[in-house]
Image (cartoon, rainbow, N blue to C red; front, side, top):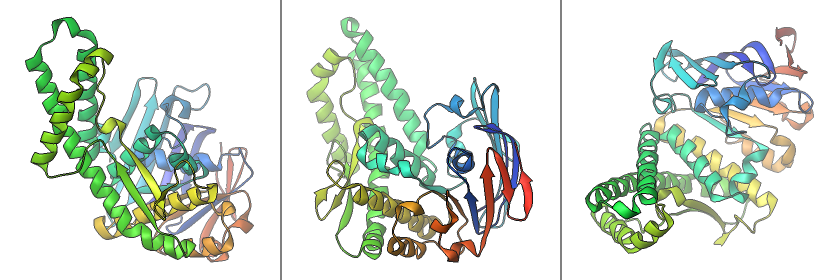
Length: 373
């Protein structure tokens, strides 16, 4: 999978920018706050339809403008070229493929597969559970086409169930409420299976990767859900029993107290949970290995080579870990790298790269002017 070119309008600090890319390695060099990360962010938004840096889409629109648009050409594994576009304004966002608008963003996501590495990744482990759920949902959505549709359905049913619990306590219709509960149980089961399968696949790859990068310690990811994972009939009965047990509490609190919307995952090193107690170095290398495991999953399970976005990560790693990571970066992967200092990047990457110098929203390709504000 290769991003051959991108066109950006009113995105962050860029008014109009058009860039063609090397099918292998693209490196953006510049001081902080010049616009390097914004380029990688635009690629991520083109892929995922959301930013990895902020939750509100309107923040992506350049100051004093009313819309932002990103358009990119992707060459897929079968050599098929497709144009992807996302438009963001005060009314929301619209996505299209080859100029054909799509009704739902869930139909768009998973067409472009990207793996982003950035300094903020530490918050995935150290931060609250909702951040890990969000991360997990985005990554699974790239891997399984249908996952986000099921998750959207779950959120709709959850909203209806919560509103009913909150507003109908004095006029409670048990039959209608049982229908809502039955529906949310079945959606819980589907999402639990997707998440559990994804985590199992991560564990299959991450152990070897961690050993190669660190040389010792055992790592595994544990999916923390509210019910024991059994076959469909048994898990349905188990969840139904749990809902029946807490119905009185749910009525009193006016909300759904159990479900996948409260799930989490934990990272263990040598059987010790490191989410809250591990060092910053352990956190950084663990989430790095998690994402390297995703690359292997995509290559071996979807036969896709994702686009890699490396936002200033090499400056945080020693030479040994850099060299070990390079073993997992296949020559056939397209890579986008940002750094404040080209000396932080391995020479083996630089010699095959297109290098862009970024200063105050102006981008100069090594040897030519390729885009500007």
